Length: 238
Image (cartoon, rainbow, N blue to C red; front, side, top):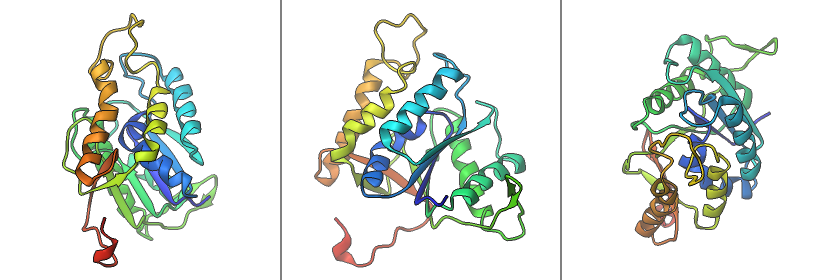
């Protein structure tokens, strides 16, 4: 199955927090989008891996993505090595995306930059003919995405470009809040974490509003790039 966009996240909810509104907008325009989670988030302070599985499925349904998979890497301990790169390569070759979205290049959680570099490296290696992979008993063809973009997470990294997501911010909030175990819940007796505060939940909106303000719209999501962004001509810039 060929996808237009494949979004990777180190943990279930990374993609939703980073670029859910952009994904919802692309799906609404007819694009086929998939999500691959590297881990099940089993080290998360709240909830459990089994609960996160259910929450991830609910979030995927809200966003309308074509497929969602979980590679089951070790939360907190996966590394950027051959073994893990090959598993990512299999996913890239399986879905042959034109665009890959992945974790922030620098962030508070150590898995985010690790996942970012792992996926980025695998995107390059996936285009090499002499790296052989098989999936379900079939030899895969080489494939390299045309673009790799990194969404923004905890840190306020300056974006290289932003996407107007004004009509899709509500869907982003709904997809994020599908992870009810992870975020603000005044009735919860579980330990507090940096993402369980009301301020963090509110930040989903106000950070998008701030990026939107800078480009003259109500809400936006930002991304960083690995190479220059090319435009057809000056009139295509907004």
